[in-house]
Image (cartoon, rainbow, N blue to C red):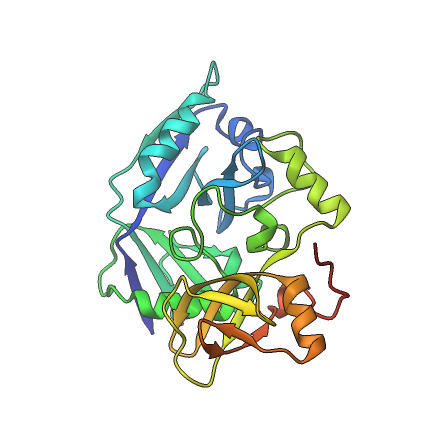
Length: 280
């Protein structure tokens, strides 16, 4: 049984009679589809369609809680407030003292299932605050993220550096293509309908220890991406799938730094490396 305290997580509260309508018209998640016992991924995009801020969306009474990285709380509150205008919502950071994650054990009644892990076959629950018995085991949490294909800002990518498709938000419920307008929707919808997403999150493995996060991923001598979170011989990377596919087809090496690696799309994602490459 594992209880992990993530001290670098924080909570922003969005409450009020207009809270659901406000978020539905602003963030990537289909807010109306978020059930009371689940946490769904979401983001606030730039007008160019890149992820500015990332979070998990949880229902809380008549409002919502947004779990994000502690370094992003002030910016998230500021950006949400910027769009508030006359909406009847209250936006505020909370004194949550981090978040507790529950793995392989019964979670308390106020914990919610993390949808990102659930679709990969792992029951992982989250609850704001510190719970008795929780340990600060970020390595165990990172290992679970790597196994399940869950990328997170600061660990796997920087703000305004990726599109939702790059981190599989189109596959794990992080972005909706069925609701009305939200910031950056036009670009993201165009990528979806034209099938132009070429960067994707995949799993990386090696026979020896992987280099540090940030190491370059190369395929057949060409730049293909950057190594993100690592746990011994396993890691995450956002890569150009066309260049990876071309290297595999030609029998050329794929490297993380100087280390030969195997790359594997996550089964739940539907991403394939068998398609014909589409190099520039």
